[in-house]
View 1 (cartoon, one colour):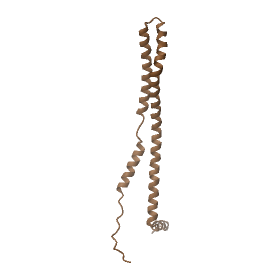
View 2 (cartoon, one colour):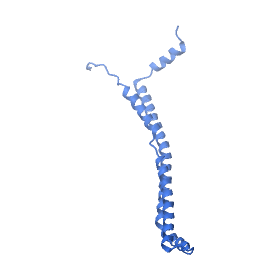
View 3 (spheres, one colour):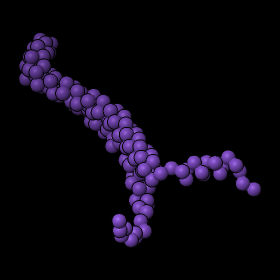
Length: 149
């Protein structure tokens, strides 16, 4: 026994022309490409944010190391010198403290940069799509005799 609803669905699919099938396949491929692009954008947006935070942290570390080090080191060194330590030792202590601060900010930046990953979901999806498309073979057309008019 056959299901009348099922045969109607087959009949509708059989009534579609080659142009309609090509248009449908083109629309589905277009939607697939757009979805993969959207997935890649979402993954990259998150990694760009992490990279921006890491870049900002390393920039701030550089600013601290270059601009605030001379000004604040003089003030701190003279403050330590007033406690009774030699002036050279005072400057050495202050310089080491600023380098330690810069190193901590650089470590923060490196930890943020290490969290940046390639868009794994997009790559896997693209590979899966490529594998499916490689398995599809074009339909061969039967050789047609030349038509004379």
